[in-house]
Image: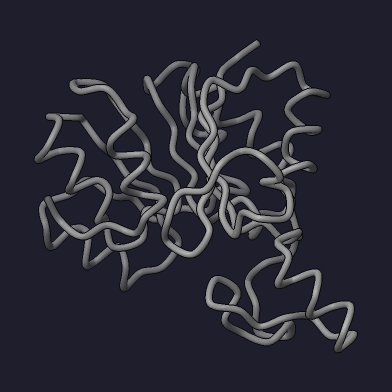
Length: 197
């Protein structure tokens, strides 16, 4: 097995073999390569960064250049079994619409994001009055691609409002799993498996 980021490892372990998956914001294709090799998944990718696309294509992966904010609309309904949006939700213009598009093109989706309510983020804001710089949020506020600061509670509320089911949830503190108890402040990173209501 390759060394995947912890959130990607959770997704790779949870997704069933032999399905069709679209990885939105696939980067260099690490997850797609793992899914193809380990589970014979027909994995396709959508990525905005040209260098990342080149790296993915060099591995023989099927990746197209595109923007999740606009280009998901080009995919037909139920084109895939699973959509994957890892560490990208907070960078989208309208996360609510992107989540809707994920579940239009696939009945199930994995969504992962950094939890902006983690205790270190809260403490930094409280003590310094400044936007924090952490391991998962490593750049200053003016350099970050993050335009929506989502929390575990915010995401759960969005799902509730839209009638979207949660089929699974995993939480990471550092690179290690943590329990759902108090995940809203203990988890640095959240991974959800969601499905149409």
